[in-house]
Image (cartoon, rainbow, N blue to C red; front, side, top):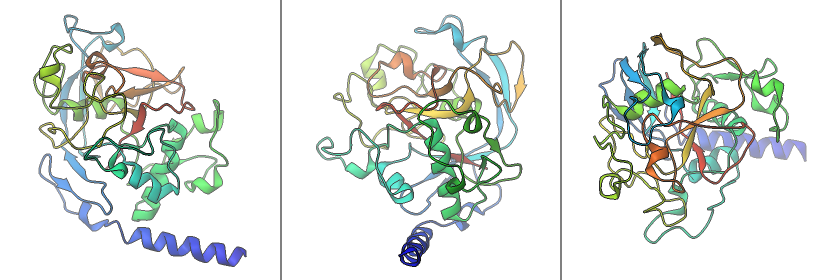
Amino acid sequence: MKKGIFLRTAALAVALAGLFSTNLYAQAEPMPGEIRASGAGINAAWIPPGTFLMGSPADEAGRFANEGPQRLVTISAGFWMGTYPVTQELWQQVMGNNPSHFNANPAAGEAQGRRPVEQISWYEALVFANRLSMIEGFSPAYSIHGSTNPDHWGPVPASRDAAWDAVQIVPGSNGWRLPTEAQWEYAARAGTVSAFNNGANNWQSQAALAGIGWFAFNAGGLSREVGRHTPNAWGLHDMHGGVSEWVWDWFALYPGHAETDPHGAFTGPARVRRGGNWFFSGQFARSAARCFVNPFLRLRVTGLRLVRP
């Protein structure tokens, strides 16, 4: 019995590996925003290095106090970022399950598998990232209990867990991972300084936001297929609305000085989510808007988007 399970697992790993191509990411010095496809639907855009003003100005409509003070942040190295949130199809292929609340009855004309996965915790995002990296032949980014193999980590915690909270990023690893909060906002803005990456500043304007994402006013009370709206200048879809996306950082107030490649606080009360979602208004989906919840929570408005060096 054990031998049979092992053989079936090995065969699945080989089959999945065939769906992905590491060579597609091997080209040196990609062009800004260049899109590369990877297997069964995880497309990634190249985000070039640069410096931007992180946070919102004091006079931005809908601004929350934790979005400031604005400061210059430098992203010193370019990275690949998923062009849209991880889909239910991809999650199912990698994890063998679909935890999503919206796991059936998509909106007319939309594909179920291309709806974003949701109801996943921050802890589960770590497992997914490492498993995807292992399938694709990249070196996994996360280490818990001294191992990068999620099989050695034990069950995914259903409450705060000290060992999982102390997860380490493996130096020199090239695998998939959650973006830092700074990487996320830098990529979402794609060179813009407005509240939204299409130049809009009024979060209450349905006409201005309808073309860039799914919000409470146009989603119909459910998650919707990814990639159906106009991308930003760097080829990223659904950075506003859709599902809120986990990022790496613990929540903390911003420092009042410039930073290079910030990774956030070493600990905190909760992990940050970015981007707003189908349930909330555009106020919560502005480029600078921040939300934070416990890393073990599984919410129908929360998904993920991955990056890799």
